[in-house]
Image (tube, rainbow, N blue to C red; front, side, top):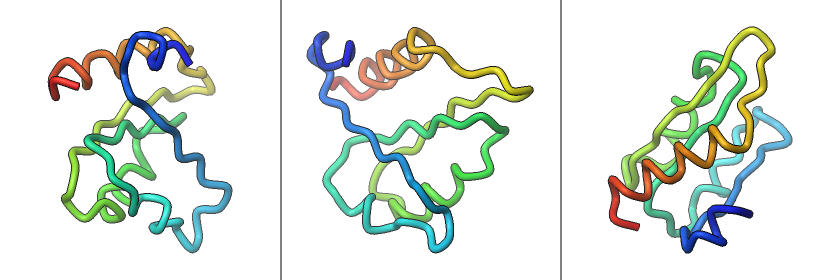
Length: 86
């Protein structure tokens, strides 16, 4: 992953089911969460509930069937890492 090559410690949680929501996946230690969706943010509130205020949850979404590309997501990761001094 390009973010790791740049020294940014990242991981990924990709839920396979949304009900019941996989809250235990968010029990690990993390500094921030970026919720990437092909929507206007239907899942971001579930993620915020799962982290229970322990970390900030940012949202990056796209509508209309347009996939966010790797460069766009990486730029958001860089922005969050910079803001949080990661």
